[in-house]
Image (cartoon, rainbow, N blue to C red; front, top):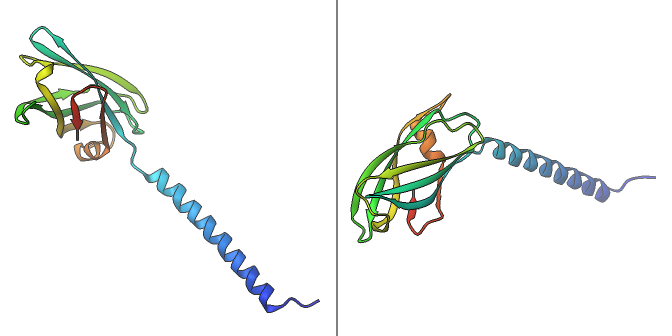
Length: 151
């Protein structure tokens, strides 16, 4: 029995479509593996502590390497949009794929006066293969407070 040229073309098209799907799936999997992992920082709380505002952050290191220390330059904006102050906070060690909670007191600052916090810069980022620009590009910030938190 002879196979018609129409059936051969349909078979070739089916094989080509299957090969295309396999290549697309492989490319998608490779892109997912190469995608940068995030350093998620959540502003979890802002509570008065005497004349200071104590800020609580949850830091989730989604990288595959431990952050030995990271220095973040934060800008605190007042309710009227003016820059209130600059502060530098250090995260300390955050193991790979782990979370840590850090608290920082901002002296002579009422929590109610802070409208927004901006991660202005990553001054330092120490760990195997880590540099400040890599850490800055990996930051994802969020908030559970009424204070806006941006990067």
